[in-house]
Length: 320
Image 1 (cartoon, rainbow, N blue to C red):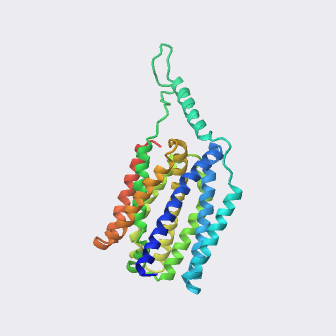
Image 2: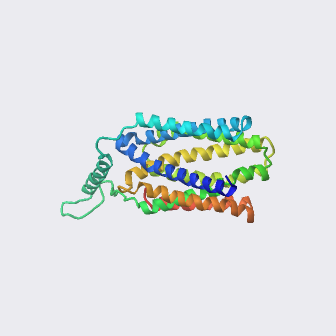
Image 3: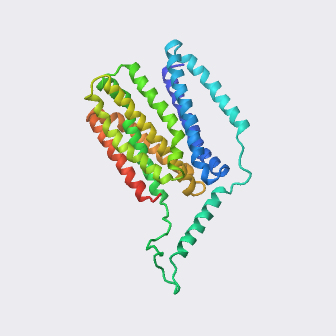
């Protein structure tokens, strides 16, 4: 097969794989929404993130060993059986809910809550007044369009900052390749195990989790250039700590946006928010390589911090 045909075939397979991954997100969200009560969905999403991240850590270690010992051929040859085994496990363990009514019940629950809140503000003559404590209890309606824009900006900032991070550590911070792998491995391990406490700390507060994840990223991404001025091994330890906190912030954000999407998204629109995120990520993949080439990595991280701040403001305005 010619090199042109090989590249074309690789591109086709990559697009098909991306489409398969795109279908996974909304399908999993619907399955969680219809199979579990509202009060336990946060822990279910966190457990899902933990298992997937733990698999990613194991895969990263296995990948490094196999490539170093046998090359890419054996690695690619065992990937297909692993995916097939995953499909077989899903086939025998996943069961659809007999009635898809849980998300509809959530909407009725919100309506009942709005009526109850409204009753606190009705006076005897029919006018609307604050409650006895002088507070207003009206439920805020989430603007999911703004939330989708916020997800796109957050994904844009993430891809923009992280696409060339390994190049930054290799060429600017002068880390050896083995040290970069170790830093990323520590990050992935902390990120995986952070899912175990995220739901316990934040409960079902999806909007709070989304905003906190974005706020943490604003600060953390601006601290990445500090690795350039610290001596070794302090620089490597600092990079591992910062990237581990970045991974923890993703865990918080991941559980939060899962809860918000399940609770407020209209029927048939779950995939729309993943599409927003994928679009932002695609743009970030391009700018993540362009900006450091022209302006340097410091400008890249500052721009990413600004994007995270904008995403935080958009999430706040969306009232999630």
